[in-house]
Length: 109
Image (cartoon, rainbow, N blue to C red; front, top):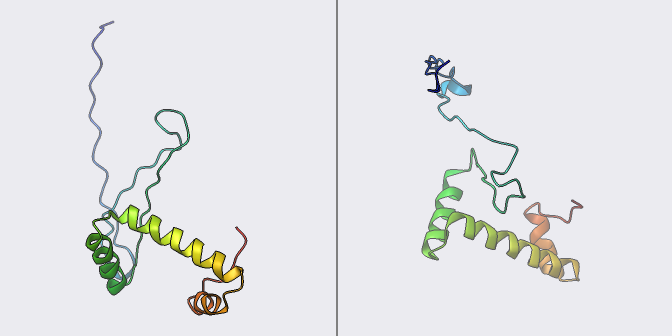
């Protein structure tokens, strides 16, 4: 038996079939359950699909205009929402009304 590793060939899988509305599915995502170092991950990847174009453009512009990455800007928005939610739950009716209008009522998670 040789000490050299064996080489082998694997055929490339066929392309994905078209998705809804005839759109080509060309995104392949690999995920692992374990962190390479064996501990908890500090960061996660989020893939957002079907974001309205105007919203995506405003998000990118707002993050870039502040010299923030998309992750930093999203973190700031989540923190802002938590703070506004705290103020609304503490009795600020105006903020509570704004959150309700946006569908951001208090929920138990």
